Length: 246
Image (tube, rainbow, N blue to C red; front, top):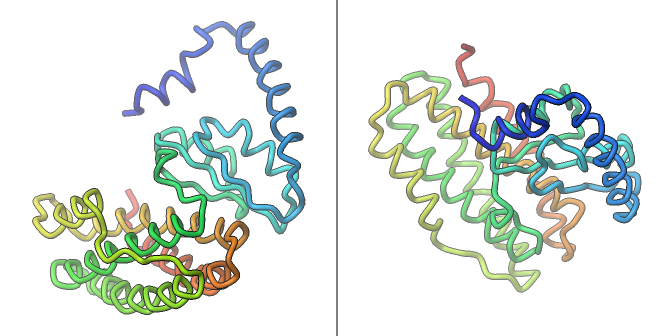
């Protein structure tokens, strides 16, 4: 069932009035032009649309970033992000992250903190899944998570040291709750739920790494993001193949 925000945004905000929708759309278009022009977006840029809604700003920016650019759409509502995914229609320049604004890193230090904590979660979930998964391909994927993210962690530590940035040693309360949910799994299909969680985690990771390849300030952090991004993207594609088709 769509959440209330998504339902209001996509179905109810114009009160069923086509005239109100047309008038509002004209106002929205003018607003988008002012924002996009003011942002001075250039070909090849990566644009982060926070609280994207139906993608008013993000899709306006997409027209300017060119083939070498990208737009990261973020919103707290997965239903709203699905609307944007339909509009994007598979455009490889678009990526989608379910997150509130305060979860998104904008500085090198916050990027390092987030990547380190996400990596810890993915390693520990991998250890759980390697023991609890039933399908051989899911077990193999989980083992890959443990191995690959351990390597990424070491690469991150070197980049962070070069940039003079601290690396956290604990994943944090919210990620611990996710780990506990799988460690004490009480659902009906562990393999499906784990694969779905990995898709969600790596969609977020891929978007963050993509943004860092453009926006990171320290060369070591940017270089780390560029080198690790193909691994993260490979994990995302592999995880998607593990999710059973409905």
